Length: 141
Length: 153
Image (cartoon, rainbow over all chains, first blue to last red; front, side, top):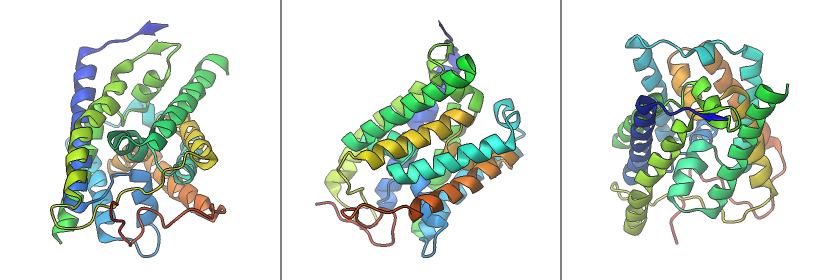
């Protein structure tokens, strides 16, 4: 095992994290809502969706659109993956997040910030399973 | 209208944070999850930085008990740690580890018109529909994101 420490990446990740935390806090402060993206996505695509849910999702999409317009290239790690694999991963992510009541944003950011024991368990479980999945695919198969 | 604007604005900010953080690059995510290989711990700072920022702010907002617009806070009401939480999170972890992408970054990259991200988001919605077909626990109450708002006790 080797540890890769890239100062630029570390700074960007920390800054990105602070921005994400500020955005989640802003949504709670102004809208009284938790920024749980899988939950918002699921609700927004059901009958009776609220307008704020679509607005929040549109904001996320707009961030990507801005990156595209600014000429940022799609990461190789995304374009290099097969569509069937991404379809399977999407299905499992959507299914699991709804059964477990949240994903990396709802449990990971907002849940931990609320000091929710439920979210701590969820984060430990999905981190462990995700790490095991990467381990199996990279070092076993 | 103001609520839509603020929701859009914070969605945009959230998305820009994800882009800057590296969470939208599946290679970085997998390098973070690969503890036994060439481990890149950078993404730990995303959840760490986000939680450290949100924790005091959430505590302050919860003490106010209402949003600045006067709306009650729609906080998750579930407290139980049960099999659904563990199994669901495990299934989610499997999906996240397979592709190195989760729903937030998936939506951002869908806005970037990455075909893979569009497929990912489409099937994630399908997965959510599938989860809604599963039997629910009797104790389970209205989902947090339904139209009805939940006031903090």
